[in-house]
Length: 170
Image (cartoon, rainbow, N blue to C red):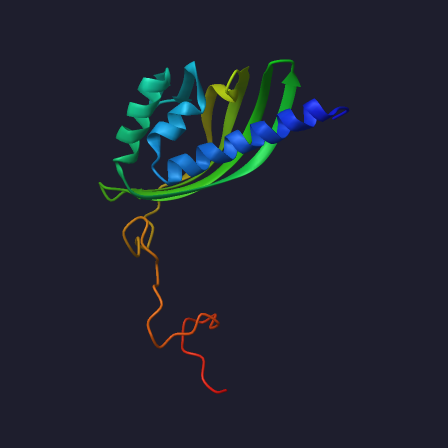
């Protein structure tokens, strides 16, 4: 990283990868699709392949509709810059349960190609490779509807209590 443009490009690409995870987790399908070039491709081998923003948007909504709950954590991998293009990887840990009752715990890698556009860096291609899959049923459940606080405080609980129990004394 010998110049400021290289540093700025790496920061923007890392932010792009973070936006992808956030948009998917928050079910913001329009935002997720906008992270790809107009002819970008998102491929999940043996599951789906979507080319173009409209198909990516429709595809993610259809796929997310199968999940009762889904949690993904991404760890940054490499980024190799070459002018207005770049390639990289992101390492993924995720788990969830499908509406059919099956559960999945995956460790995966996204193999990415990026393109600089007038709107900033975008995914030209994102390919998902599962490295580990565990389909053992998850014992837990989603504690609440998406977007609602898991444990809303009651009148008797203090914001200073880490245990969620009322703070006593003075």
